[in-house]
Image 1 (tube, one colour):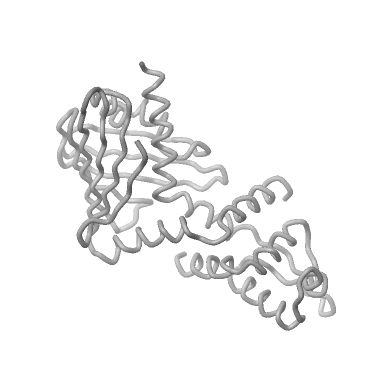
Image 2: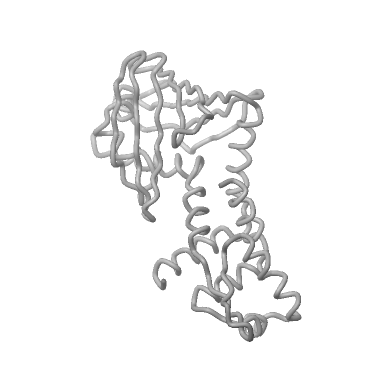
Length: 105
Length: 157
């Protein structure tokens, strides 16, 4: 679980990879389609895709010609659940406690 | 009033927060299950089970359910109960082995209460990991964008 989170986080640390994920959130796309908005070579994009694939964030299609990429949302949800830990968890809880203490006045 | 979180010594994290209420009320909100269920956890989560046996040796257990269906379990056993000023309890998450020993004090001044939680870890490594994940999250690049993206996913997928 922790190794998985580490790889998800390092995958998300790069703006190009986040942009790729944002694009894939709208639907699957080929490597060529993904490369279009970036000033990058296909091999450079492929490298980013490998990182995303290893983190379990995308899946590549079987079609040998196109190999379309598809977003895999589950690891992102794990990140979201993890992100609720600690500071944010308590900040939000204590805001709610403020409200509760206010209503009991 | 703002939440402070800081490392102290090698194995502790100290968390402090002020509330505009006398400590008897804050202590109640902290220890009565029907009240705890109304504030503990993020807004988008729901408290499914909230049990508190408020006495030395008594257990407490909070089971929360997140918007994605994931759950989180917090539980522990009270070591000291001094109403309305002090609680000492063990705390573990999701049945994990890395239990902490938490000392919560409620100090009142001019009708306001400062709550201080000292969280004692069994090793410096575990303490640092908790802090590191905390800070990594705070500083995580593009985290806001990630949240937007998750919102998009929920809406679109």
